[in-house]
Length: 99
Image 1 (cartoon, rainbow, N blue to C red):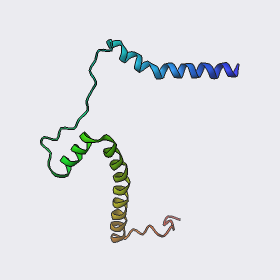
Image 2: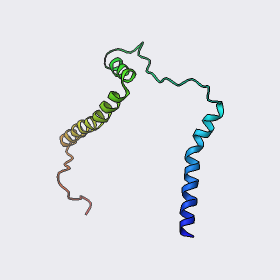
Image 3: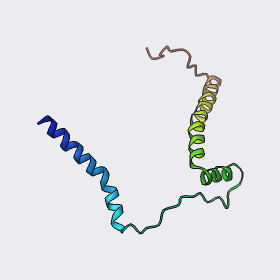
Image 4: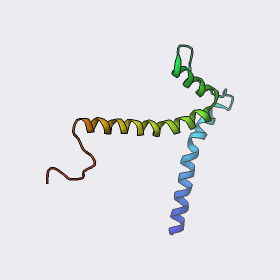
């Protein structure tokens, strides 16, 4: 009985995963492929470069995004730590003031 429940669950999950593909194929299969691009006509500077990178290579765009997000987070965290030090918040001491 336990194996039957597992099999039934797996079959249901497989059907649910295939449901979007089944609905998409209802169009008859004659649709054109979708091209996703960034409109860089009115952009300048870094924004133009970023949009062009997205248009030219999705892999490079993805890798650069994966690298830049943590680096930006570390920089913002360091800046926040410096500012909190300036205003008197010391996060190096773990003593709770309320106790």
